[in-house]
Image 1 (spheres, rainbow, N blue to C red):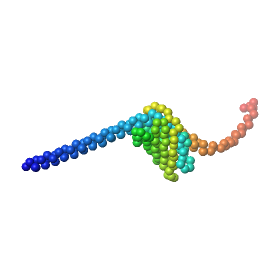
Image 2: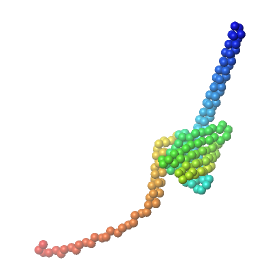
Image 3: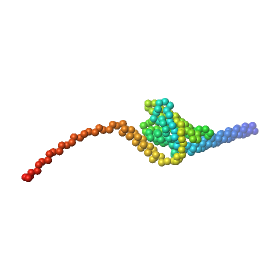
Image 4: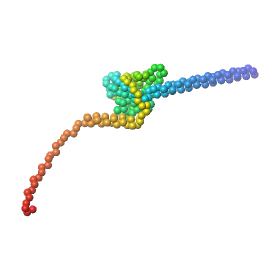
Length: 205
């Protein structure tokens, strides 16, 4: 009987130890998760409220995105001045934080006609580098970019009016391009009407 009691007691101790170990591991996992979430929030706060001037170069032949651009991080969203004029609104982005080295942001912009542009950038202090992939029906355009300047901007803006302004600019540029490609109508001469000779006045009429 004593052996049975001792065995039951040992089994209970083992089960208790296993429960304690599992609870400890769950607590550690929760602590690691909260630590990572805080690091992501810190890196987003570090990125938000900044604008980066960048120079974009195409890997192959020159594409539409090549040249200078400015990237805005406001409202915890990403916006490109160049793609904004092409009709792309600001988008959410994800962050892969690095406590000591460069952290990474990634986002995807979708145009009104289904065109997709992927952005991936790494930043550390005042420097940013990254790559862009523009998905087109005729094939993809691949780019890389480097920052040339960084400046502070308001952390939040009126996003709706901002996107509306960019949409108007995109529409205006498209309309201007359409007008410039449309030939001006030719002038046609209108035949002048001949005036009828005036009747001579009479004393009788």
